[in-house]
Length: 173
Image 1 (cartoon, helix red, strand yellow):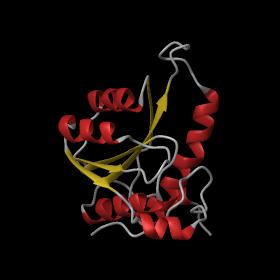
Image 2 (cartoon, helix red, strand yellow):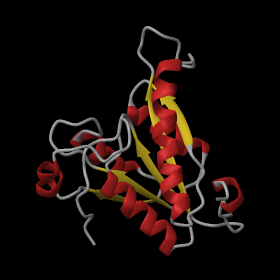
Image 3 (spheres, one colour):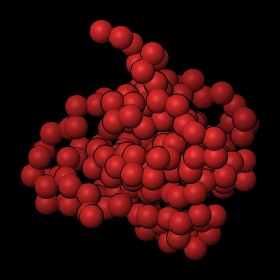
Image 4 (cartoon, one colour):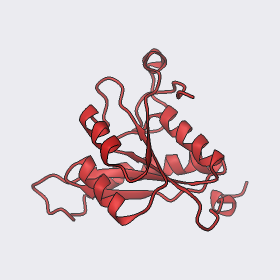
């Protein structure tokens, strides 16, 4: 079997870029929806792990433990996208809050669409205040995806990817 490196899809010059920011975990249905959108638009998927730097550390401090947690998640996202034939350009961005990290990313790069996973219940993720701020300030079209909570809660088990939030519910169409 050939490695993913040999089958890695390449993005065409000027291809649209779809940002999927997350912190702590990423719901499977939100990821699946983002991959479907990227595939339909012949776009590059840009998963971005937003790393929060506590105030006791310098803002640019390397937080090895958090990066160590982020890498398997980004790798799992990349494998899922590559299996679907979608090119990936993963990122880790740091900030004092997830929103601060997102602002830094928006200042550094251009995105054509932003797909934001909304949390269900008490899981890690963006707060309603964060989501409202994103809708108001995003530099591109922004979609907030909320998985079906009944299917997610009924599942009861994880998605099979370490550190990822439980969820296999269908994304809204």
